Structures are given as C-alpha cells and as structure tokens.
Length: 512
Image (cartoon, rainbow, N blue to C red; front, side, top):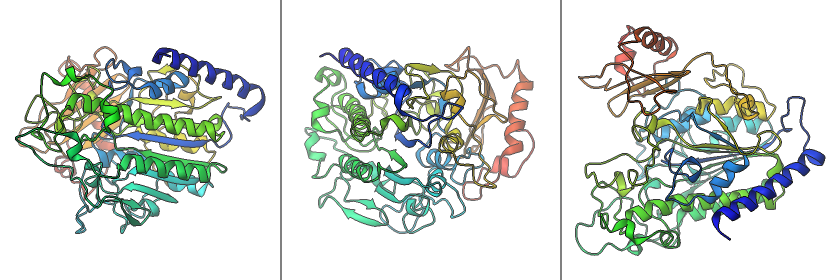
C-alpha cells in the first residue's frame, strides 16, 4: 500500500475504535474529561515548525506523526517557553515563563565532569512530574534532561521521576554514540569506542560509517522507555520522552539515510564539519533521516500503547523544544550540516533556534486524547509551554500545588474545541543570551526587542501576527501605546534571577 492508503486505513481503524469507546468503554465526567488519563509527553529536539508533513513538509517522510495529527488536534500557534534546550525544558516542566523560571538559558553546572550537566533547578522547584507522582502516577523520563546533574538538586530522580534513562547532560547528547548514558543516578557504559560529537575532516572521503560505534543511544533509550511502559501500564503513568533527534551531530542509521535520494546532496557535496559537530557525506539526506527516525520512534510508542490496551485512556502530546538549527558561518548549511533552509524547516517563519522570532519559538504541537479531542481538528489558539502544567493537573484530577505560581493556563477547553482562551497575562519570553532578547505576545500582538545585552540594542518591534505571521511589517511607530502596554506588563511580572542576570532589566525599571 502507498503511504496515503496506509494513513487512511489507520485513521479508519482509529475512528472505529473511538466509536466503540464512546459506546461501551471510557468513563467521562460531566465536563467530558477521561478519569485520570495516562499522559505521554514527547519532546523533539530542534524540530522546526515546517519539518512535519502535517505542517506542510513535502520532502521528509513523517507518516506516524501525520497519523497522530489525523487522530487528534494540530496546534498552529503553539510556542516553546524559550528558544534553547535547557530553559525550554525548565518552562515546560515547572510551568513558569522565562521571566520567572529558574533556568533562563543554557549554562553548564561546572562540576568537573567531562559532561557536567546543566545548571540545576533547585530543590524548591516543583515539576509536573512531582505533582503527578504525588497523585499516584508512575513517572518515567527517557531522553535528554538538561536541568541538573545527578549529584545535584536538579537530578530527575530528585525532581519527581521514579525512573530516568538517557542523557543527563546536553553536551553528552551531541553524540549519538556516547561512551555512557545516565541510568537513574548511575552510569551505563554503552560504547567502549565512543564517537565525539565534534570533529572536522578537511580532506578525503567522508564516510558515514566512520562516525558510528556499537550502540546507538536513541535506540537504547527507546528500548528502555518501552521496557518501563510494559512494567507500568497497569497503573496510571506519566511518560516523558525528550528524544534527542534531530539535534546535531547528524548520526542517522543507514537504513533511514537510504530512504532519501542521492541527488539532494550532489549540489553541496559532503559536510566536513565547517559549522561544528561531525562530518557527514549526505547532509540533506542525513537531516531528513534524523526526522524520519524520530517519527519512527513516535510510531513505536503509539503502537505499544495500542498493544498494551491503554491508548484509549492516554493523553499524548507531541512538541519540540525550539525552532530548527540556525545558520553558521558557512551559509551552505546550518550548524552541524543540518539542511534547515533546503527543507524550509521554519515553514516560512522568520528566524531559527536561539531567536525569539517566530521561527525560533513557534513549534509543531499535536495532541491525541480519545473521547476528549476530536480527531482531525486544528486550533489557532495561541498557547505555550507553561500551559501544560495546569493542563495536566486538570486532566489528572489534581490541584496545582499550594503557593505555586504557574504562568500557564489550562488548555482542556481548547482540547475540547473552544476557539477562545482567557489568559490574564501575556505570553513572555526573556532570553539573556544570543545578545539578549525579550518578546511578549498578547492576542494578535507581539512585541520583540533584541541586542539588550549589547552596546547597541535594537528598538522595540511590533507585529500583528494574525495579518503578518512572517513578521515583515513592523508597526511599532504607528502603535506605540500597544508596545508600551506590552512592555509594562512584562516588567510588572518579571523577577530577577541571579544565576541568569539580565542587567538592562535587573538594574533599571524604566521602560527601555
């Protein structure tokens, strides 16, 4: 069968199962919510808004994620909480926007290890895993952590996870054939001859097999996740899957590389590590292969939920931590040889990872929840990472922790089809790296200012995203009151974070 035929068959089977579910199976409360669903949260790494078929991608094959979209809801205005890895994860797991969050950028802990891990969240931080664990859920995390080494308060085992397996440190995750992976608070040595994540090869034939070792970390992580799922599916569970693909270095398995035509890479030739990370003989095919392999992992998780008989009461959320890899000094490729421009990975949005332009923070978001989310639907409601904390709490029938200041809003009505969402404060991004950036979105309006940590910061820009999603028409001069209101809302709510200083706002409360 062709891919469209398989997609149609899978969708028909899903709708039939959903009809049976509504007749005989799942208990819903008076609001239409399932009774304490399982929750599966899948986080891709550096996947762009335009990298999936269901978001318009025409070259890269993503049948499983396209099927997920057909079985649930596709968000067109969903945002990460920060444009880089660690701070995005902090906003996601703690429910605080990046002007309140403890982690506001990428920063190593400096504890002396070769891969030290990132700056740790504190013992006082409350994660959604802790709340769900307290509510009786089994909690497992498998993939890339980035919120503190195992010997600190930021360890996933100290932050609500019964089980963790994967990369504690983001730098270790630059290699798909590392020497070890973190196994709870221990080390699992997996490759006696690991491949470092960074290397150049100025001359000679670039061979993909020269940069491979025995154990491919993403497969080992997936196996451990399925093993945990098999052992915990008979109780309520929260499965967090921060997969590492398609973050560079490019290390796709050969079988997925072979899916894509050699002609793609004849124009550029091999990537030799000019923009960092590892060389690759077929960088465009390699980037596509990474995304297809990620898609395959999602398919295996979805299939396992079916096989275990728990799919009908499982809320599945798929998102990305930020936009696609940004350009480097050599303009033929993005960082690490990724082919973000060739695939239009941003989906015509401006900017890449590390920016708060739409391409850096607007991300794909797919949600499947049988009996609650209507299949094949789309929402344009603006939402972002801090919203998942209260959303999961409501779905799990548990309250927000006493005293917790969550910056998100509950999306359960959105998941049920509501076209409006009441948000008492705007969505906020504070990023004291890449020159220093602040962005604020309220309804259709988005204000952004860049270079705030430099000697020559830009002026505030203002965009009407309903009319101008490409951010081409700056309206700041004609709507100064809107800019001032947005900036005032941001400054009135932000807090100082000494570990991630932002001097222009920490030391000066005037409107900049």
